Structure formats: structure tokens, C-alpha cells
Image (tube, rainbow, N blue to C red):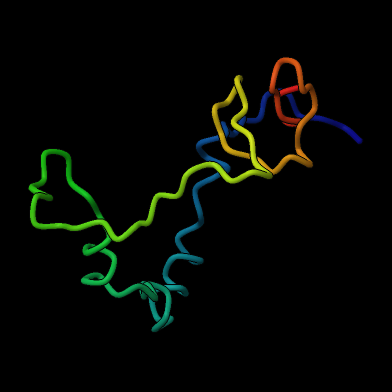
Length: 96
């Protein structure tokens, strides 16, 4: 296949742009600009830095380590005894 080295080359930016005809055809598509997300529901889940959370209350019950659990000395997570990799160092399988 012959290559014309004098022809203007397209950059990556030019290749990523869509043709005018494709854009015009998509303009008439009614669903092209719709987003299936409720804005108010999404906004409620955002936590802004410096937000006043003093009125919020946590409902989490903290339990002491059970007899069949241990705290990994590397990641400091509580694991079941079946995850113990090194009993001397008290390290879980993930950290070993």
C-alpha cells in the first residue's frame, strides 16, 4: 500500500473530534443529553469540608475483640483466627 507523505496528518485531537454530520444527526436524538440521576438525591450524599455535623448521631455498637479474633500488628484490623498467618508476630494472611 502506497503512503502519501505529503498529505496533511491528523493529530490525535483531530481524530477524536466527531464530524459535523454526526453531531447534527445526534442533535435530533431526544435522549442524547439526558442523565438518569436525581440531582437532589445525589446532592444529599455529598459531604462538604467544614460542614457542621454536630447534629448527626452515630448508631454503631462497638464490641470488644472476641475470643476467636485477633488484631493484626501490621494493618491493625480485627480478623478471625483462621486468618492468622504468624502467631508470634500476630500478622494476618493479607499482610504476611
